[in-house]
Image (cartoon, rainbow, N blue to C red; front, side, top):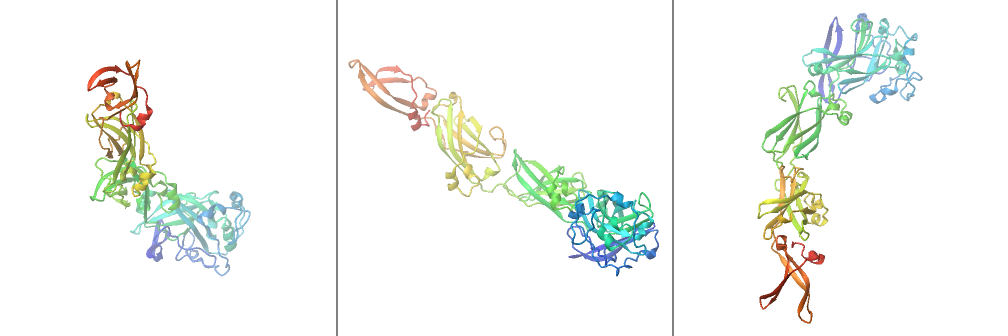
Length: 555
């Protein structure tokens, strides 16, 4: 609780007059003092009455009939506004209104019967709510003083005050059949002019430019007038000061890497943003203590925020989204988003800022482990690789690539973007690394046989990258290089060997596998005796899947 200044408002000639009244009010949300009751209609603290040109003696007669009635008026909340416009039945404290539509036009035209000796001026503002630059007001006003003007020109007017004691009109609306509400409960308590149709439920469009200046407090004026514009011959009922919510609300929905950019989304809603039309999202390096960059954004619709904070004028359009380049950005630093509303094009000048919680997207010491389970070059023109790669960066550098690299020649042979393969064994071995369960890979490269060279050293590069294109080379990336694989292996076996043609020939079956066959592709069988060649014969190699299974890493 804290002490606030309230302002009494009345008309003197053409000038609005205010008198400060010290009252105690809760500082959060919209404050509207006073729930009117039939036996307590004194307006000294909650509402004031202004008339023109009714005589002054009528202004202070609010309590003239206080002892005649004791029934408490029903106060309607915002939720019940749609249910109170019903001519078929009156509303008491325990009644539930019917759902039949109102026919106010016919009711308004009827001759009214009321106590013309009641000099009181009665009214109440049941609810005041701000949404999307509009003030939604419900309540009622009933007084015999309005009989001099009739009920054809009724207005709701919003007056704003600043901390200098100045005031200005922020908006008004003329009531009509759609915004005038029947109030039989008022009629039951105050049998005065137009009590039956004294209610209202209307929206008033606010001048936000003026509101930025006159924002210390606002007051609502309910007016009966004898003029079509409402500026002369009137009787007013004025609300207690309404204090807007002065808090600053914000939330960061997402901060992560998308398409090789730092992507942030969230919202920032505050009445302090009124008159500050430039919304900037600032990226701040908290580790180094300086701004990195900023972007001007267009606010986007956030109905969920408006529902949660209806008292904030810009809540319905408080959302933001922004993307920042990753160049020269250290994701291991604490990065902080600042949402700023400013009256200057560059985001400086007069502004209000919200510093959202800093985030470190990558640990300063990231784990990075991997293993090649299989390197299979047994099929001509195909290289199949299986294995796994775990790293703390996987949640940020979330594009995966596998690269076949010729270390001897110093260049890439092939690359492909890969999908994750589930590896529960790896997750069990590295339970503290995010993404370990999906760390596996199983890839077959299509290669030119000429690129598989006997004697060369090759490596498999498993890559996490922020770049979704190519081989991920243009983004922030983390690589695991496998141990070198040298193409210098060979193996062979004789399955059968026997003499033929009465000892004049030899029949031999078996297999021969060698990495050299990648470039030396003319196989021969040689017959040797004591280290000397006796004969040779070119052969046609046949498929031996059993050999390929045992020696997958031999070409």
